[in-house]
Image (cartoon, rainbow, N blue to C red):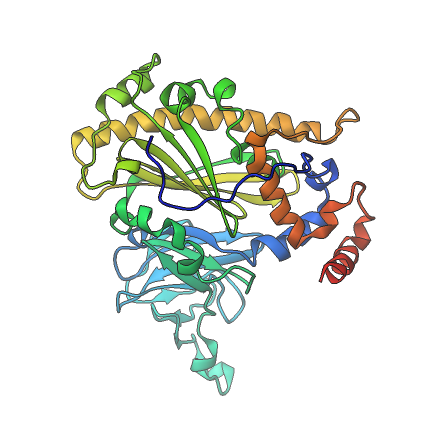
Length: 402
């Protein structure tokens, strides 16, 4: 049996098998705290260097009232800025991706920015009196790159630098040649679900449901699947395929045609691997391709599931076929998980809901909840405090814990 060369944290012999109380899934005041303490202060993946291959290429990323543009400059450097003109706050670029030829021109009043974010000039500059152009460049957003993948963070937070945080993944990302990946022709996918974001994470953070809920995955690798829990909110799930041909068309043909990649180490050659990062990011690699996906909260009861898909730069026909078959399996799995998330989220408001009682196979779910409780100890309360006192009560509890 092939093992991953990383040390995992053991599941405790005895642990409280309850999850978050139901009120945590529909409170607006708690959602506001999650915005401040969880999402805007933690790293978010926004794409890959090769999503912006040429100077002037850009992609955007919006999250809970903040908006960023990631652009490659004339010097070839990728940078991240707030997508906000320094004059009146308009978006300096609009859409998901595009190209600026030589400069960024705000569509509102025509302020012009260089591709490095510096202000080239304001329209009708004499009307502004003395305007210090150096003081009015686009505001930068903290950004780091890990094996080609671009991460940003809107506010300073508790996580260390990305290279340090994701160090346990470095060898595998290098083996998969992550830096060389290129986006597929239709790289983005997105669906909005009428659920709290934590309901999506609850489903994705455990493999206990795979045998019954995901027949294709069970056929593919369900007999050899394991979870590896690492410090700092990292989590690896891996399933090995190829021991049986599979019955469904997609699985049978994937196992038959998936090419063996000689450049991969033995533990990755016949594996589907998922690398998680708290609070909401998963990278999924197969021998022939990769993707990342994340659940982005829009409201207490609305979440956007989205991600990007990548391939190797010199993909041959067999790799392309395998990637297509893997997409079919992923498509079915995602639809199944979406329905499970809806059912789970619905239960939170039922008078019959009495909380979770978790299996050892759901330790990942509890571990994710514990990470949230450390940031927002108000989530340990069985009953919610009044909405207008949520932030104050959480601050008091943080002070008591410290």
